[in-house]
Length: 599
Image (cartoon, rainbow, N blue to C red; front, side, top):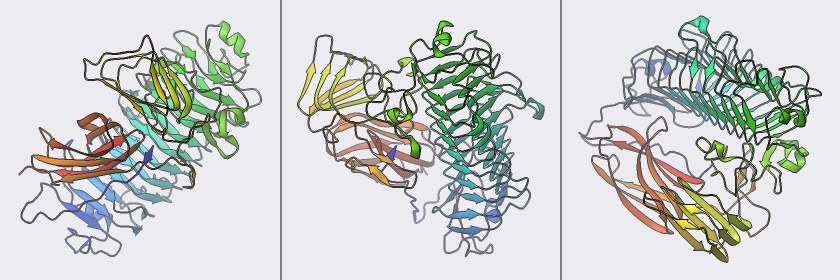
């Protein structure tokens, strides 16, 4: 997703109004004898700040090096007033463990804690970069964990944890991210793990440690897992009904792409939904997806690119065929119905009833933009375009970069959806929900039905032809708009999209969409005026999110013309606290921090 601005850190002076929370500051130039209430009067150590906090408090940490980490074991935050530890910049480095354990950050026996933005580097044996144990409803986001002995991020008995937008690399002994011990409903998304000695993302129910030994309803999506060693890119032991989609998994050595099994967990992993992943297994890897006996129960594998360069291992290996589904994948001619053993060709696999609509993979260079440099965006003309199934649509609404799916006549296969402006577009897919934008440089021909609460916009340079069969039924708040205007990108048979490489070099760029967002007053007592500017027309979503990134209120959703717009936001029953107002247009967004305070 292309984010045009980052969250603003707003520090307000209220002149007589006191919020039910305290902001503390920590700086390498501070002093623990200070009051810590402003940056010039910051504390020196992270631990001293952690010892002061109560529910609703935020600790802001200035850039610099902190040779001692911190350990927080109380008090708890709450759902409306979490305790937040957040960096002010991008270079707050923790280079030594906290005062109790060898972890850079340790959160233990407390709930509703947010860790945001830290760099944790080089924790000694047996330390983790960031550790959370018996800590529910916590968030770890935007951190960088490098060369820590055990793992980058480790959690145990952590229900409803959110782990997002982290980079976990070069763990000396084990994994990038490890979620364990009966941690139900974890969400692990948009992280990058590479160079770790073992697994990229490991989930393990681990019955021996107590609890029920089952991780239920995990969601693992949008992650980049590459160049790790041993076991798997994503390892799942003792999971029930995990959802795994939009992950890019490549070049993991001596490893499966995704493994479903039971070793320490109380049950065999089962009921997995594995959708729209791109998995490239190197010559020294193992299987693309390994499904052990029992893990087949209720498991579905749809819309994945699974290419294995190993000399004899292949793409999907199962040990039991019961209640197992696999289809609409791109694979090599190597499958197995007998586990990690001999392979059979795709035709023999299809004779067993699997992958009836799947295809043998073309050469990598015909599928992807530049596989030699690990650019696995789909190439124009790729066989993966518009041949997936919509059986995934209850789960997969965007791709790994946040582009709306499907963008064409059907889902693209793999983690990336090819976005862009084709010369001509024929639309036959019915839309019943969501914000849908379809564009063509020349002409759109539509024969579909728009109903439910779908908000649909068609934009074409020359004409939009609504043919027999086209119908709009908007009784549930949906809408349809057709616009004749230039496509967002140059008219071409080859779609063009905005992409950024990992080193920040823009390789192909659409014109920037200018979003301006203003809120007055802020803090908000009962209501505020929200103004925003759109450089182009389109379907807009204006929504409020809590500190965990979860939406709590939709303020405006629908098609809006170019120009300034304003609306009134009322706080209704939202409790006092810190929120983010998010303005989204197509694949662009802007967010601004706001405070609700009702004295």
